[in-house]
Image 1 (cartoon, rainbow over the protein chains, first blue to last red):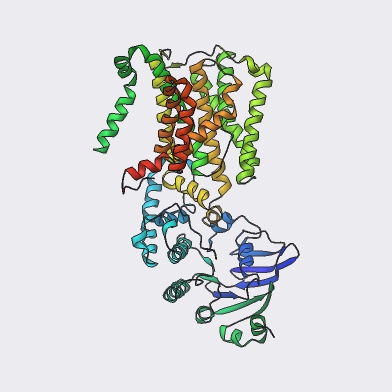
Image 2: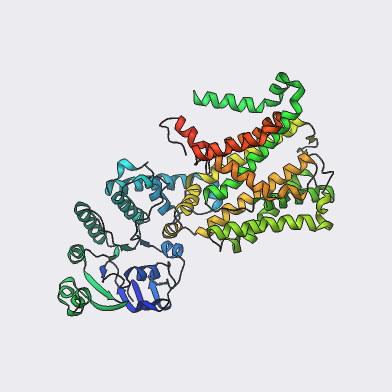
Length: 251
Length: 321
């Protein structure tokens, strides 16, 4: 069985079927892109996989666990990280704390240990700060570590949210439009980061509208239209696929 | 320099009974009474701020928890003759249990609905206190609650019968609450609370169970309010349903939001200003409410984030939290 296995997933909003019987299997270490016109159900699919929306049918399996209709924090706890299309940070925490908070729930969570601040917890915290500073450095935010996340620019918040998702060293990353609404330099930077994750053996699923990014880095592309999977294959084949062209440009 | 100033302040607060006796002997009792109220209100406001300031849930149920603690202590101390420390502990536990039980359904509501739900709880608690006459004596009040007596290990009993004695007891309780408040609102636990407050969906992605941490802050805040309730009735020796009306919530909202929501310093300053000030203004009884109301308006207009933000700006570039 594949690392991430989505089986016949269905999600309806009132009369609209946003995700319609979608099957998707992602192998460990794969870099897969999910594309499709606006409203084709890409983000809804992410939301169903990560517990943000209850599915109306089908199953989601990940590394031997059944993720179907689990709460978001449980899905995250199992090693699935996601980012949001609408840039999302904790505005009143500092940039550094935004990263720290993404790791700590995977470590000691006992109330008493946290109140007493046991030596073990203090050591974990020191290591976490070190890791967070390395990640901030990686995305070029080292000098903004102590700034409130709410005061950062749009692009900086996007990078911060990306770095935060990496904090617990997740096995599977679901990235929702990491290259949208940012400048070309940052798009290249983001491409580099994603390829580096791929090189490290992480499994990445990408929702992205920027075709240069998608065609450049994906091993496999999955196309959704009106909630249905209409095509799947290597980038070159997808580029020439008649159904895909029709979905994007009309007949 | 700042450190020295802080120690002078602590020493001054501890020595207040003697300082007041030396400076204004004729008014010592009255001033100490105001200070005891201020300490108790500061503790209550901090317990409230754990909920509204740190997990961002606008609860209006605090009088209910204060009342549960107050009545638990009052009834156990008068009818069952429980010793002070035992009824204090029972008051803390009773308020915590009530909060944990009502918290589960209440937190299914969000934002405004949650506020209205908690307001309903406060009203129900007040109605029960008024009408469950067999237990609470209703409007007749529970009277004759003894002064606290703490059994020291090894035999002797420390009876807190004087005003200075009670002042130090209230101060000790406030000190304990401040320490707990700091432990809860900084480091990993504080960060988790703040993550839930600032962005609940994202907190889920950070593997935080928002409901769990909201409930935790709610229960601990309620437990502390119950403890303050016990101290309060042992001080006044009377507990009446009027002590747990919506007026208490209004007081707490004024202290926390005008002092500085989510800030230890802000809430303490708020408690001192808005508990002691109305008393000081008693000197001009006709103008009391006018001056108090004007002051509230000025703070709201000039510094909507509370007095804490004024202090922070006055402190220059120092970034305080």
